Length: 323
Picture 1 (tube, rainbow, N blue to C red):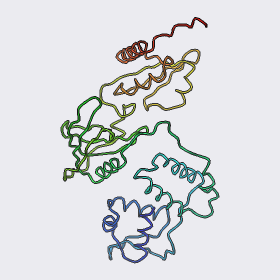
Picture 2: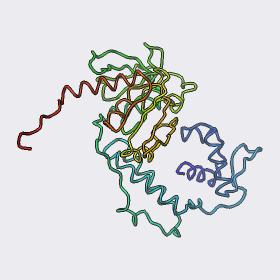
Picture 3: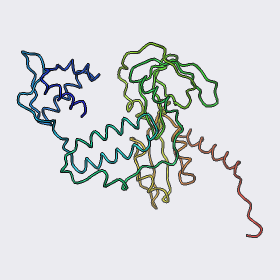
Picture 4: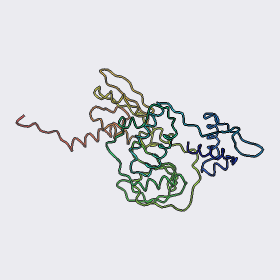
């Protein structure tokens, strides 16, 4: 919206800007400028035309001011939820720019909207039970490198392993279930790998850039993942849950592939198609004896081995003689 307001100012001043000139000023693609102008013309009813003779955009009639953003109460409520969700970014490099963007949106709202963000200040909040420990300057460095397509040299430490050098092309920085991950092309492995920023002990730019990644889509990359791990196989996972916890399972969409089958006495089975068992194993163990794995056999064996190890750590307590 801020960019469209600035496009409006350029056109209203009579500069006759071209899409190429605007794209250079705002550091976006020409296609983005075309979409902005199309939105301004078709959705905001601004009389924009391209003058073929003078080679630039102009208004065909006088425009007094840039139109207010028209918004419904439902949309405004969604804006409030977005603002509240920023609580998880308090103290990060993203807090100030995100809040600034929301404030600019609020200032463009029409005065006639009866619902005000301040009226709902105490209505909604976001909480998390475990806040990840993050190196915020490192997150910012990774984000900038991905945006600028700058090659990085990392010293990366996997759990229980010695640190090793990696040269990577950072494609995407994503927050998955509250944790940050870098998805990057690893030159040594010649494949896309996932890196946890908390395990990066050293980082520097190599001074070279890489071309825009072709056909990289995070949703496609993680389509068979229960979190961030995928492409380790093809597993049909079947878990039976007791009636005591079945409602908790029904209440969420745990994975796009899930199918829930109702059983007798309120118990259920959930069927998942996954590319990795690492994260779903941890999830199953969190349900204790209320979850029974039926397939695949390798997961049944892993859960059984963990249960055996736990029984050795916590042997059954002997009954008290005074009981």
